[in-house]
Length: 284
Length: 292
Ligand SMILES: Nc1ncnc2c1ncn2[C@@H]1O[C@H](COP(=O)(O)OP(=O)(O)OP(=O)(O)O)[C@@H](O)[C@H]1O
Ligand SMILES: [Mg+2]
Image 1 (cartoon, rainbow over the protein chains, first blue to last red):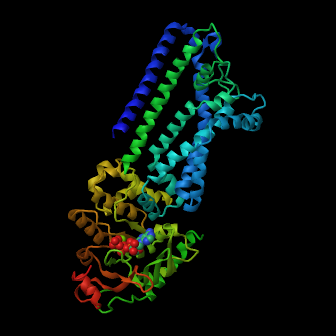
Image 2: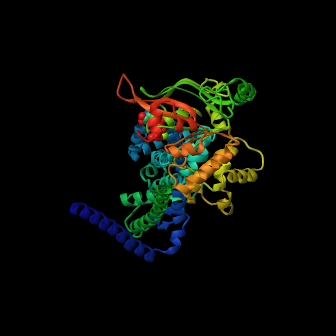
Image 3: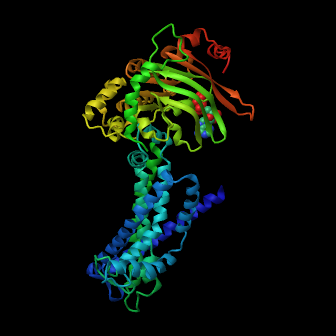
């Protein structure tokens, strides 16, 4: 009991320390930086161009593409597993999804660079370079799919059998039972799975670092076939030192500012999704 | 799968079935014998290797309330769920013998279970309204069946028939989950009525309700039996005696091969006869409370 309590206290203290150190350094960055640099047309920390729109839209584009992949695949897999798969098939597919969830993101990053970018993006757009946000988005989508699938599947399974029986008893087919009864009954869990997926996609770093092409800086661009930078990618590049040079003193502190921004975004997404998940549990 | 075609033979055969079929077990001297809706012959049901019910034969009459009584585990629910192929949903369940519905073999490979359940509705032991509005609960069945008429009117009528209208007319758009247990169960009956089925199967529909709510459901059943054939499973013998016209008494027998209990039909007759002058000693012991 004591040990667990101590562990809980330590983890809370560590989180608090992380947040405080972020806040402190982020504030000092904001006070020292030339605010117009924050609206620059690109993210080039070495040149003191901290264009927040660039990395914000970069994150949104990558996460958006990721969810275009992960939402249909993840929800489809969840519906299949929860409603259609026979127990024997499920016993095979479920572990496969879990293994997929355990693939290191660096492996997916390399896969995105060596296959997704040339084979998929290269065919969609002749102008796209090897490094682009679209390939990163698809790679992140692959990473996020198992998470979406597993949260959504749990919420479909939480729908009581009695509701399905009621539906069948009224002469509903499997399909209408799934789409008109089970899905709406599980909607808060579905929403939660999507929000968690978005949060995970925004937080994903390695794939972006490898394939989005933002290391060293990126121009502001809304075109997913262009290279771009995300908040996480920017932080990793800064932390690794590749986006810093001696003399550009604001580059390193900007890391904390972006980190705080990222922390606040994912925190609020997680809070929202937690609320939805709780609603699922209360409903029946 | 044969789809709506099942309609045609049902409609064509129904009249002749009405004329020809006689009810086997019912006393011929007293009370009108109605046409047969279900003719169950040597029905056995298995869950995997386990034989849950053995050799049940009975004929269920139209526009009557048929009660199934018997000790727990004797297979009442199992038999009831065979009547609208609800057991199809249980992977391990398997059926032997024959269930004829207006002369059609319900387990014929050509028969579409979805179509069967549209005609033979079901009300469950635990009220199970959809987590939707009261209105949507009632409208769901007709809507998936492609109902094109006036939905408001249908919802209104169904709720009236289920004796729920006055209590909910002001809050049709509110969630059904906010109703009391008894109201929820009447909503489930309204929902079943709305698809205009031929038969309504009820599995202990009042067992989760207090006596007042139970009384309302019983009154309601008397009302709607003019329109529907009702088969009800109940644990409550007074309830069976009060509301049903025919009663089937089931019990569980220990089988020879293993020591699991298999359900059998002991006696099926007019309710009055079952409760006052049963032919079988086991029935008598049960209805007089000496057993189970
Ligand atoms: N899905 C199932 N899988 C395996 N066995 C089952 C299943 N459903 C019922 N059984 C078994 O079949 C037998 C009959 O069950 P059934 O539910 O039909 O009895 P019942 O008469 O309705 O009992 P009760 O009055 O308790 O509701 C029991 O031994 C039960 O354990
Ligand atoms: Mg039962």
